[in-house]
Image (cartoon, rainbow, N blue to C red):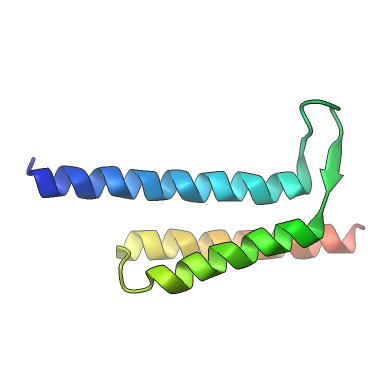
Length: 92
């Protein structure tokens, strides 16, 4: 495998890792994950929305620089998180 291809693969994997990290941060703010210190789930929809907005900026700023698959994964992630946020707002 060429050095360029290895670097592209590593960069792609790091990009997916970043998306997973951001997804988990939003899910935590929406109360999907319990706080390890207290064992209780807490909602902070304002922070969740801010994180979603940050992911949207990431999408905007990387437009044209992502592979087709990366762009689709990012779009699907944003859709998933926006819907989760709407559901969380309805249950508040």
